[in-house]
Image (cartoon, rainbow, N blue to C red; front, top):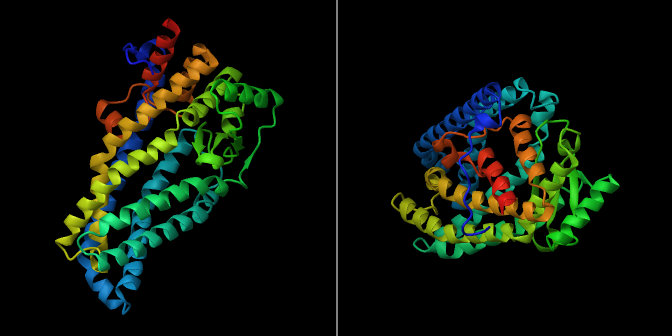
Length: 371
């Protein structure tokens, strides 16, 4: 983006009715309260496990790493169980506001395959961490961090294959032609753009970029193509996602992860060493607790990076489509279809928002138009 770009402070009342602003504020207030309570409940569960895990580890009768895997599984099950009521509350809230569709049983069953993969991934990390922590009690973080970063890289590269059976190529010839033109405009020719069916679970519209290198692709939710958004607004979304590809945001995101990973694991090693180190399976809940607290503390920093990437992708979309009116219409529509609050409270913006606010994004379309 231009270094001298200045966004005006727009009044949400000039773009949305008072009833729309009140509805989005009420909807997101519930979400924030639910997330905060879920986080506090997770911390409380971890505090209980910190006290009981040493005895649990001894009672397994297994070796240190075997006991660590059992304790790790108990931690994951406990965190899932304590979060479930809050997830149900969010689902109920979405259904009440017409954002969620489909039967409850499908909502409960569908994520199990993904959840199983996540659990296996965490179990692998625990085994690697404990093996190195027992061999190098003081400096295990120097060896473990590159391993974890490599695992993260592999996961990002292969993640598009996990979507292979749930996506299809766009059926509309006009949409395929628009995609090709936008790829040429953003110099990312050959980037696959697929459509994922989610309309049986949600009415919200979204899109995302996934993969790295040869596996990079853009995925559009089919709810984006159900007629609520104009052709120009859909083109803007595609251009935004291709902007992420053009600016190598996924690679840069991994770079930021690497930058933070070493000091985080160093801090984790030093703090947990006071209780015996992570080579001891009974210390694992304490390690999880430290990571949760670190994640809360560092969330604002990660959000700043994410918002920068999203702003760059918006600017890239404006340059590629040369259609600020569609960009503005898209952002206004997002507030209606996803009940996103146009101008959230500052504290919520700092801690929760990975994207610029609706008003900031509208202001960017005005700034581009003036230039």
